[in-house]
Length: 260
Length: 166
Image (cartoon, rainbow over all chains, first blue to last red; front, side, top):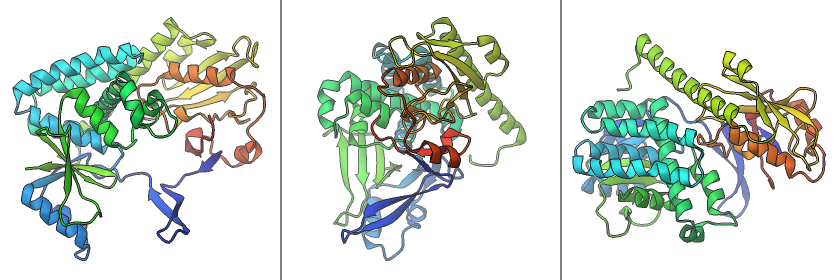
């Protein structure tokens, strides 16, 4: 059944804390004036959106400040995990040529894996070629400014996002037997990938992060800044016990990039 | 970074995006002309003249409720294709009588909105539509057809669909 939405605000019913139904709303479209990946910003600027009375967040910000120097924001368009991961990792690759060599080989091999899984060749090639073109430029051609410009040019940036999504989907489908245990409801891995991984704008959960870090061999640390108790942010390394170079900040529904 | 683009840069960017879009659509058209799925036909000549709007002929599959019927699907591609889904609807005299197809040609199919992925293609949309028709057990309109047809936008992508039971 259809529901009309010409507006950017979607209404929905939710259960409030006292158990009553109330109307909530969510803004669907994100102001496109916000850059896809921002410049580095200080914690002072980053924290200015929180009220001084918001003690939980103020304390957790203080905690982050002890361990990190600054943040890059990403646009909250549902692709932020992939955009934050991609940018942060590529930024590292600009400095680390040995890792770049390893990654180039891994990224090249993902194409055949996807074709074997039955993805249509000409759509995969389109995204694979565009992805590899950017990876190729990390060797010597790109400066940090050019990398930032590429990630902020939606026409180029989204090709990278799609390919990262396809890598996650390919990995989950290849390892379906194991990951099927983590899918809620009665969906198959393929259905899950078709609905929650491949479409643009679908948000990422632990399973997406685990799949991407495993598929590419790139460990990630996520610092969690939520309303949970305590004055500190908890973090989790994917996989456990790794030494991640990519560090992301998670606030409910959104990922940004952290710098030590 | 993030400074306003000069008119030349802007034009350059716009052309690059347009070029990528056209390249992708041409590849899709070649693939579909060379190796069309059963019951799917495109008139490549008419499409090469205007790549952003395609009409695809669909035959009702043998041994389905639509055997012997012919339908026309219209595809419209916006500048954000393939990141945004194409606009897809039935047009012409014969709109299939189906629980997910409204009498104005709009189709309630999740891959056309929520579940669209840039790795899908015209070909995969056609296959899904053919399979949707083939699996139909009873020819009828959606229960809210008359209300929907009166109130909806011309563009089916403007509809927020609830997909109950696909």
